Image (tube, rainbow, N blue to C red):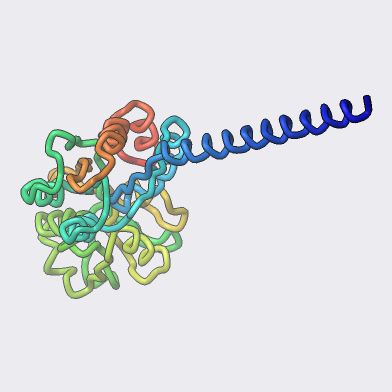
Length: 265
């Protein structure tokens, strides 16, 4: 009788061990499948979108099986990286020109191109200065030190600033005093640290800083429309996921976040 009981105990133990093993294997297999399901998208985007995209990322990843990675910088620099084969799935530019260049070179899917945001150009100074201009026309180059703008060759904010200053006949007056930033956030930093007395940035960037104040918003008539186009890049290996993200950027949820950070469509 004891032998039978011992034999039954051994058999029961073997069955239990096999069941546990199968359960563990099943859990591991499920974990592998979950990892396989999750896709990663690299979005090369204008650095002025930084704060809005951080919030959009959290919202989007909660509802989609996608991991978003942002490569942020001046639109021109990002476009040049894409032209040289840098891996990315989606591009968001701070102007139409750089997107036009990529479309002309057949580096994007034209039917995925959409305008997802707009912005304003503002003149800023450090909040502790006594500078109190109400328009760019009031400023005399003799009364101020350095003027920060983005490099017009690669930074859309700098290109818009140059257009405005040319329109207002101030470009030549300020040119010798200009400090060129690699992107609009560097321009903001120059003013925050008082390395420049005034600077031209997007309204959305100015609103992120407690160290600067907006002196005036430049008239939209002085520069090209500030529009942010988005498109899926032809080199993507995640076409469906990239398409879904570009469509989401037009959604009410995404637009509310963009508006919260000073963007307007």
